[in-house]
Length: 280
Length: 272
Image (cartoon, rainbow over all chains, first blue to last red; front, side, top):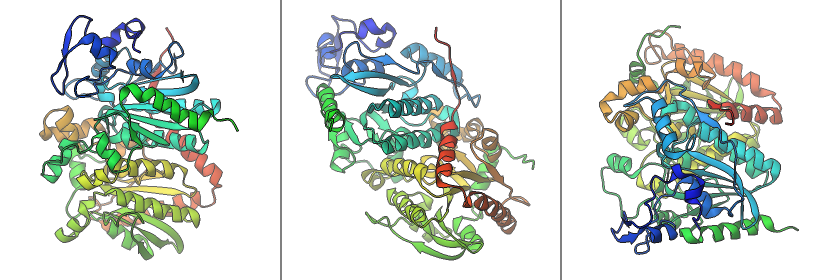
């Protein structure tokens, strides 16, 4: 349950609506009492729409209460290229940091899933679209290195638009860096599980986001290499209904299962139990 | 070597209609080329050419992205934009290189991986991710040459290696300057500004430590002096292949990992 969202980090709840208000489902426009919305894990009771969760909400959803310890919290981004578009990158970072309470778009830590210790990395879409720059790459690598030493399974929860443009080719190279790390994890025979949430696209999907031993997706998430708008512009035709949604990916054999949010933890536990808990 | 052109002007050279493409370099640099086809899963992607060849009388495995020259050939090769089958074919042939202890030379020239329905249905992201992982572990040397356009994940999908060369007028970027301009600058006509901001020229990338060597293009560029450019590339390849030839596999892979591990700049703030 999400009982400690408000206690844990008040800054992280900018999207939450205080108790006593009504909210409108972004998909079906159903008006829902906000307490019910939160208690149903931000999933619409009418249409099943899965709203985005913050990184901390995700930890509360998946990790046993009181077992989570954040690691590599202070690895922070720098403006390597002196990048300015409509605003300076340094300003974008500052705004994102203030809005999320995170240093960058990924939260990493150690915790337990029904008693099984794991390392978990969670992306937060609110931080510059969950984009991957040097910090995401570095934290993924450090978590993997630590997991190999401690022999703990690794879970990553993806919510990302891809590589971060403001760090130029450094960001692209994080794809190679993180994939190489997962390669080493795989050689060490440590389980790696991907949970794909809305959206999981481009450079993050085409690297550590799709290299899991088991890949789970939440219902209705956009999952793909190229975003639908760019594809439509390129091929100059309208895309079919449901294209690049979780269910479409399942049908095309790219993911193992689509799991609704309230069953996510028990399914994750079941996978970990099969792969890891067994002692011969 | 002083290049006074702006990043955008360099991109126009990299995309110049008369600029030599991968097959031109293939024909000049290698003998006895034998092309291999297909990914053994779905199809053969003509945007990526793969096969065996001889370089200075030694067998090598060659991978390269080809845009095509005539309009018919461009269409056949999908303008050098690979589908998942291209990445899977490239990896299949690289695995042959590993099995038979041949070095891999991989040539990049693509605007990007193809953004289409079939490419998505067949797992473009999965194909690229798998190449990145497998190339990082491949037990044979991989030399990468960025010939003209290094377009994002579509380029990197055959671009993980031990030594990265880039032609003087080539560029290598996380996103096309046009794409960056339309997303971040909200105006696709600002591509020249985006090109500047992204730091994508060979000199910038060398300075940032993201490529290992620039191959000079004499007398105005590869489209003006192709043979001069080829000669510079040949010398560099010859030198680098010799350097990697007798390297113990364990050392090779450890050095490759250290190289990949080192990419990135960040700070680690003190605990408050």
